[in-house]
Length: 196
Length: 328
Image (tube, rainbow over all chains, first blue to last red; front, side, top):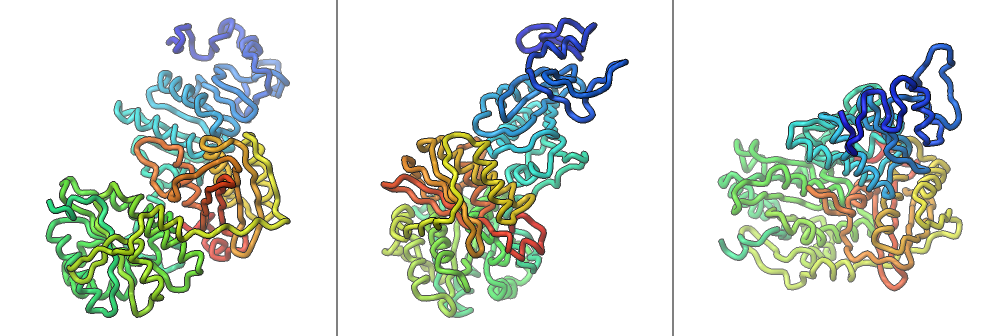
């Protein structure tokens, strides 16, 4: 498998890595200069405590696609997924677009892990919907996973009509309720003053 | 096709003063539609639904229906309901129509709500212009105030009685109607919390969240308000000067967020009413804002432009009961 810029890569290896023989060195060489330990994802090595080390990513098999003060985008190799971390807004459109293109090249069904995403705006949701639209032509899926409670409402309002090839799962792995049109006329009025 | 048939959106007001007059318009409208195999949506009062149901007999099960009071509590939700019905039922035949009987609800509305609903009625002429919906809006002369009835002739190009139609001379194009019917927004109170925005969306969101917490908005409701304010700022970043002042305050029934760009312009009074479509638009964020806020006021002029959002306050008991962040 080659990355989009033609460099050879193998599972578990970053494009800047020295080689699979030294994953710890590979992690140090990533050069993001930020502690990015995520719960449960730290690679443990014999003789070392799984802990945070300032300035180092304790994760192997992760390519950093973008980082700024608000948002980090990672392409993770095992399991193969695009990870969005932090907050994604208008200032991140081009970065997210490039990342989604990268994910589209790297995966047949595109997995987008939002477990560490605190915020995304309407435009960002739209970018993911548009990806689903493109992939639908080839019968490919988009799976958005790990959706936090804070991010659920914007997905529920915006993913309408819900693309057939888009799955959205919350942090417990449950499918988010397939959202109805927010104001679809219902066949039966419920009587309670909820409105539609 | 005749001129009328070639027209895209057909929008007619029907002023009726009796059950017979209502049925005189509604029954042919529905029956003709069913005979042509056209989708029919009835959004009217329970009493009128009953009248039509009886009159249609066994054919009544072929129509879609809604109690009008529940077809979108907010104007933007109502517009979305119509657009959604069109999107789901649009006929494959170019000559065919989607028929919607849409009786607006006026009883008990505040004067601000009446103005907003009248502007929505006017806005439908623009927002649904590309659909082949045939919409008749019944106005009950027995219960609706005369000035509201008169205004229906300014917001609808045609009036229908039975099967007879006449052009409304009083009709104003939507932009003119909005301009004529829009009043200045009251000043923000001196106690409003103020944030000067210059492009730091993260900072704006944080400020909004902190204020929202202070007003007792929690969880999903605070999250949605933060998104809404952010979407307004994003729109102004793309269409205004990129600098704006956010003022937030609480009043009866609302947490209010006013975003003012002294060098911005908003040309479309119906910004945010159009549904997101096949292609992403930079107005999609404002559609979202209109879905989740009770009211959205837009102003644009010599002093720049302003978007004022009214979200239900933490005191909204109905939301506390339903557990929903916003009444869908």
